[in-house]
Image 1 (cartoon, rainbow, N blue to C red):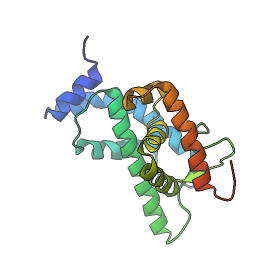
Image 2 (tube, one colour):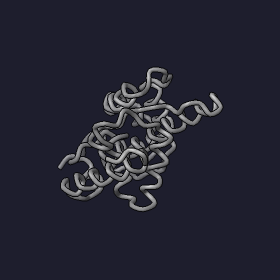
Image 3 (cartoon, rainbow, N blue to C red):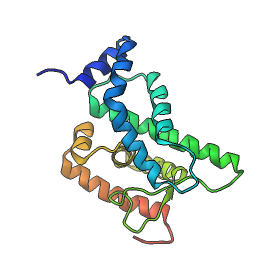
Image 4 (cartoon, rainbow, N blue to C red):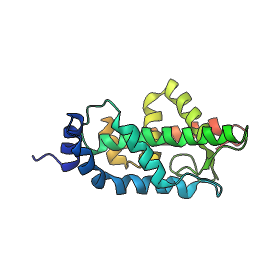
Length: 188
């Protein structure tokens, strides 16, 4: 079975062929830009970070990451973590600049957090995901990859080596946990 171009380029890039990154970017950039754009459309009206900036900063960070790339889904999973860090770092910077001002707000996918949730701050989500990871790493990872990486149930199943039914169950349980954690005065 032939190796897909993205996987081949990821392996070549990790092996030290610098030009592989230039060949890889056009193959994954639009997909990552689309994912970042979906975050930005859900942010509050005063946000200053643009999808292109999220993707570009993520790529700069990905260049230095020490990972044995397996495939496109694995790349998207690592990119999801990286974009999460970019968004959280940006929110923290804006929060510091305003000396306690409001955190950057984004609306989560209703499949993850709940239909009535009007928005959640990125720093709050990051803290909640860290708490969830302390108790259940896989649930935290499923949410991160689904929300920040845009992975489908099938891609999540492949990336985490679990069934799509388990992905569905983990997301539903994580959704309830996150809702309770982030909205303690509003039961689901």
